[in-house]
Image 1 (cartoon, rainbow, N blue to C red):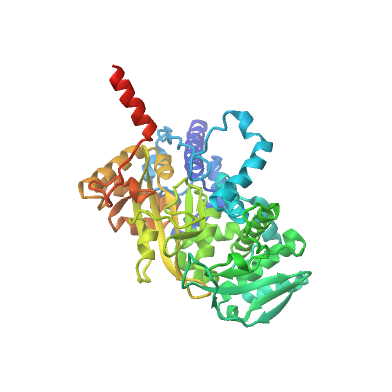
Image 2 (image 1 turned 120 degrees about the horizontal axis):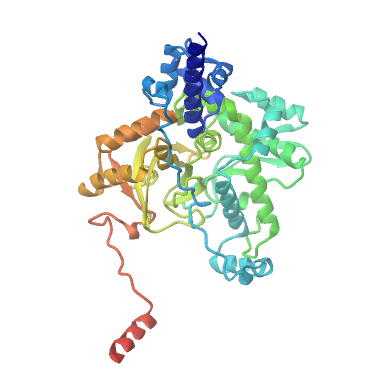
Length: 522
């Protein structure tokens, strides 16, 4: 009897160890795993406490319960009874901080703080970049370095909203009242503000803050509860984080919103206030997202709704807000997010997976790769969304991405495209599969077919398994279309034949002269 108990204990311990290892390999908490099990079968699914006991070898799951757990991780039930830890995931290559690889700051004496304080304003002045734009670039690097994890801002928002989701407009106004904020209304239609680079765009001033405690809101927001809630949430953030001081940007959308900022002087000389304002705007925006979509409830909601951007309607938030929250609350950290306006300008960028930019966000690029889903959708009048699996060639590196892009309209009526996506590579490697083999299989099919082709069955099976584990349905949607080879710039097109005529690469003339002299000397 004692031997039988020892055998049962050993099996329970080993099975629990395997479940815990799978869960941690995929970045899931016990809460996450319990929610995903409940989504598959609410009656047979284990609770958080029971899962904990299973992982610690104190309980043995029933056959039904084990089948549910196995389905979450795309495993056969027999795998859990095999007393070997054969599944050793490859360690994913650590991504660089940001989408562009950094440079070695050598020789170090040239990169001293004093030298940079002199050189950066001069660089911005000569390149035409404003201090505000430089501030956003710094913030984006900070975001990407931390993969959009800011627990202090999350906690501050949760303390105010008590993790309530969804928050109604009435709830949000009640928070404003509790904090001593008054709301006043004004009526202002969208209008054209001179902007040589964005002709035809309408600009709408949505709201602004007037110290010490008044929020002025455009009456037009009352027709759009999701936008009204978001604007109120950003002003609540300013009250909580910055003690209602007067340094608060105007909320505006559309064309030239630079002039709508409280720091309207756009001189090329950098002002430290530009950086401060940009950082405060980011803090308020992140806080607003965390208030409307608190981390744990939002993560569970996204898992239940398979990360569908359209599920934003159930929370009365915009697709853009929910898509940005995906990058912050998902247990999988390798995300990107773009908000693109025609003809090719990125208004918002986040690249926690290191994907290069398809265009600039400080200016319009002249040679975007036309095969990016966000670019294709931007050029059409279709209101349909688009899921795409892409192979991105960037120098000697090729990565496998999947994204979801949708066309939306801002509060001023301007059409634009928001896009969220993930790097599939780390998820594939976590399953113990060499991502290079999957990439090579997809690439071979695409190159043979001129640059795009259906994903081969072997690779499709692996990607479908990853989609189920991550609980992201639009990856399956991407498999229903052809995978496409994309690149950071059309002038670097890797397709054969190329999509565009490549400009001839020329070396500096001095190198040609040197080579000619050396040839004559020999």
